[in-house]
Length: 190
Image 1: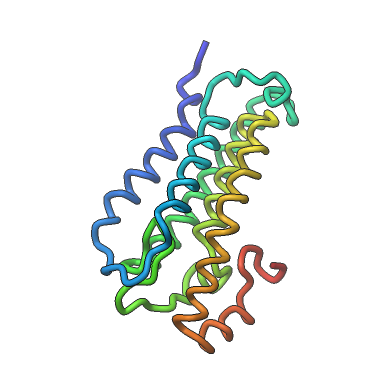
Image 2: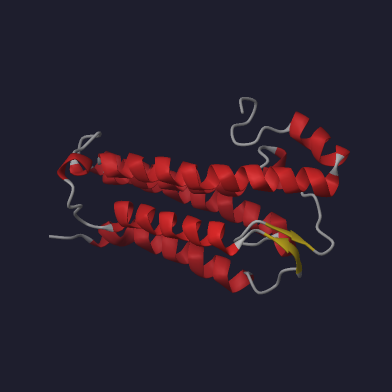
């Protein structure tokens, strides 16, 4: 029997995507955009990741084994982590404002944002999303959740590298100084 809280993670993600979609129309014009192929491949991999986490039962037995014991504390700990990650990502999205986009882009009059969550890490959107996905993995408690997190990291890493390259080209020494002061994903570590 399913409980109402079984849908909590889906509702949090739905709210995240609805908000992101609603504010995505007020962005600057794009001057440079990544190729469509890499964007499509990334979307397909993210769809696989969503299936890993979103299906109530997963057909591959080894991935359906638990790495954490089933229990309310597991679910609620994971749900709390998911909420924190999504809120951190939304804070970053809000701070980016009109410079935001789903694909890797350089906008007209692109600004280098270094305040708010960008004072803690250079890629807070990815940090927030990875934390939210880790929360889902904890809530699910099965190995498929950790595979989804690893898949997400493999999706975000090349995107992060391309963004870094383009920001260095766009902002030169300003971005170099920023990257020396602020770590990419983990404050004070990496």
